[in-house]
Length: 209
Image (cartoon, rainbow, N blue to C red; front, side, top):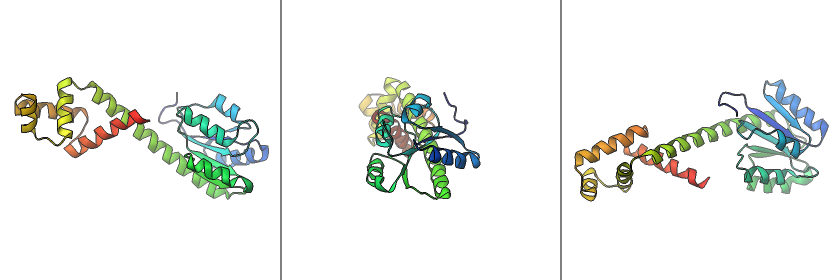
């Protein structure tokens, strides 16, 4: 399993040996780690689902197309950004790939610098997505660990209730409510109610991913 400080991996999948070697050379020339595959199946067999990076993927390949590979990764919930590389006649396929969530598509022959810039942007995007996902998961775990009473207080705080109203509804003292609020804020590392609401909303998003 990859660690957060491991180097990003640029996976290149293209059945054209010349294109495959050219992109790999270009990527390695600027000091990035490249892994090249002539078929989607080879890529799937070697892929580390936890890796940070992106996929430079040819749209049209025998056996499994780029779109089919994109669908496969989506079903497996592997969110590596995909840069589709297309020939002139494959632009409609690339457009469909974009609608399905591809990061970008480049038409052959592409400018080397544009490809490198796109790869760098994809890596930055993936790092940001992974970091936010980890934050949501951590917040979700903390919410799950709250006591029953803390969850009751939190629900009422999120509903806009004052400490006095919460105390009345739960039949406890205002001081007890404030104590629960302080513990909740501390556990979630929130300094304001606005931050608390943002964190809880973020945590709930994990249920839909």
